[in-house]
Image (cartoon, rainbow, N blue to C red; front, top):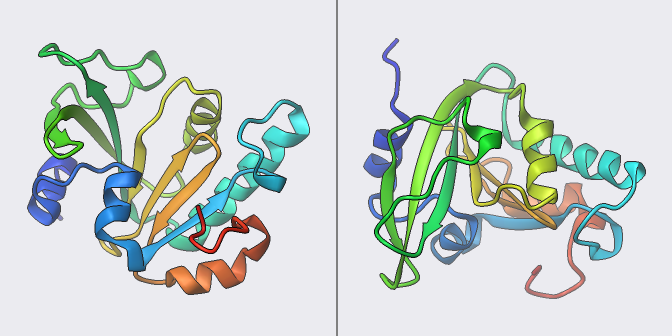
Length: 186
């Protein structure tokens, strides 16, 4: 079996589109669904019970779109506001490739640098990564299953999913209490 390079795979599939939730939503609106990480659209957990609920929801959504043992790619992007590429966050230093790829975002007005690593689902560090995102220690993380094309983008407050199967509609029917009350699901 040939080992896939996550960045080469992404570039081969999506070209210049960055692996960032809001960028993907612009292109894949029909495949998109969003779920809140806490009841009543609360954005940040404050108590152990809220962290437990956040992780329960994260695991349930991830297990709905990823299959045990399948290859996944984890992409982490950081905005660059000058020509110097940003450093790897400490929370990800043991995992991310030192090789980075630059993407233009915001219609070319900004740039982000993306690094990646590959693993098998379930990801051993999944809970820790989701907690770091909830605590705003890291952001712009995308977990992709190259075989299915399903993508999970946790953010501080919820999860954007881009799926072929199950469909976005099916996911909304499965987890209706985790949706926004807004008609646009934001």
